[in-house]
Length: 351
Image (cartoon, rainbow, N blue to C red; front, top):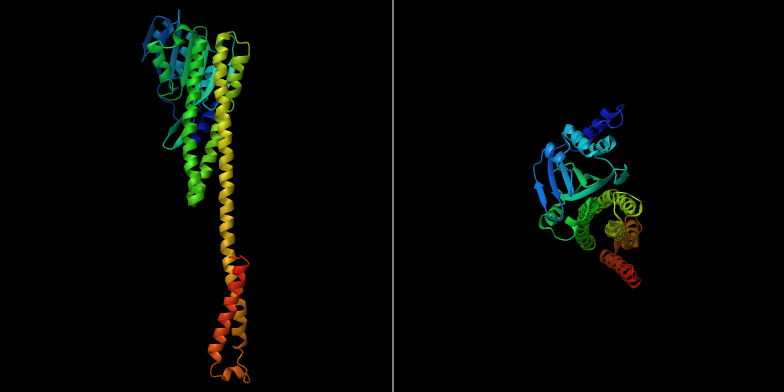
């Protein structure tokens, strides 16, 4: 938290387009991964240089993946080689952007959030995607992503990806990000189902903490995914020169998947809210049962306490005090009073 605030403070007063990393995690080392392909050929360079990336422009489609945002100078050179606007580079280094789309004419800038599960928590990573004429550049905070399936399809030449343009590659990357949302939600759905069973069978304080934790995760997911709906809607509906009409149909499919994910998140949020209400209701019922038992016990002992109080006054002329069988008779009488009250309560279904 301190690091993020410090990064923001350093940017105060700087001119627009000034490159300064702002993020919650330390910026990792920058690594360039290059794929240059067409319908017949594929060139893959896992550890590419800036010169190699600059020379790759030409026929076919270029996909440059940038892992790590530590080397600001390298990012400036990449922006210069591909004609990326300085404001785009500034937004790339500010990893607190919400999902959005910006059209700069000769290139389109898209921000999405890539989600993953680590150590039992959902981790968000910003992914910036720049679409230009014949190229796609992706920028990630850390190494590791959900694009391995896309890389494998490019290597094997499966489907239509090698014969389509850069806009289709943008679609496949967005589709990979959205598809992984389903994986996370299925995992969360299973965990919440187990939690719901525990809530009804043997609720504890830990159960209540788990419900609150999942509610926070649902809010986190909603903030990360909800704006993506507008991004995909703009990609398929706005007249963007870099997105071909043939790609709109595929983008519409991703948009539909996003709507399904948002509906699932809303359903899980409502389920968790209901679970919280059930938990509080069960606590209230349990408290009422305890209070009912205590009230019945207290009610039974009220007349017994009265009888004991009367014969505890120690007046001199109380004839019962001198009876030989007075004590056992009083005890039997008190027992009969208590038993009679228990029978009356039972007939009224008070316990």
